[in-house]
Image 1 (cartoon, rainbow, N blue to C red):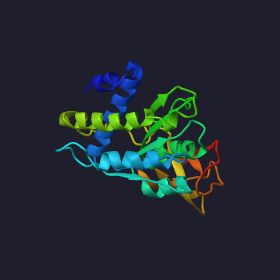
Image 2 (cartoon, helix red, strand yellow):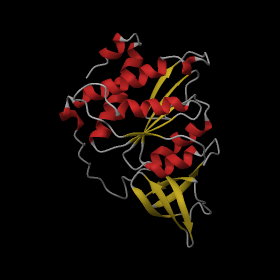
Image 3 (tube, one colour):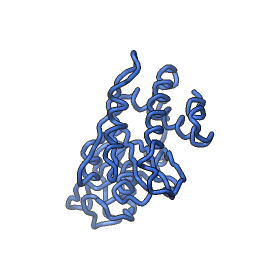
Length: 241
């Protein structure tokens, strides 16, 4: 699958490659049973439009894909209780949006793949799995058709990927030593318990984690988990929990 469709729409080759890569990831996640959750704290119509785009195919024979727009206050909490490991979160917002920043930081602990659509100054490297960005600093950009073009192309390219089903098969899990090869994984504390243990949500699900090295911990905190032990706090810069 190439990015020719995106280039034909007047986008740069780099941005076209970003769109193609994001679409390939979407196709793999949808093929594995994922649901897409879309948010746009400052422009809710974008979140609604993304969900409609994927749920209601406009081309005969294309499958409807599970997509839901999340809106309203307390979006971090709403996303937290909605996503499941393997799901997708698509956000439309500027890089300084504290709600989206908090969702993006926590998504690895929830096991979610993230796509961030925006304009102006870019988010820091690694804040999302895929960043689809217009570098134009004009604050009116979100109200133009650029973002709409992004998710229309995502939909089109995702269905192109479905035509190559052999590429969408799950990768075989590698055989590794559970202790030695367990890298630090992001977790979110669900509930602290007595005796130096806590329930921590990671991409693997809810785990009973030893917390004696970093106690005290509180619900909503991010921690780094290694071999069943919380080894450090991971501070949420924006303080949104």
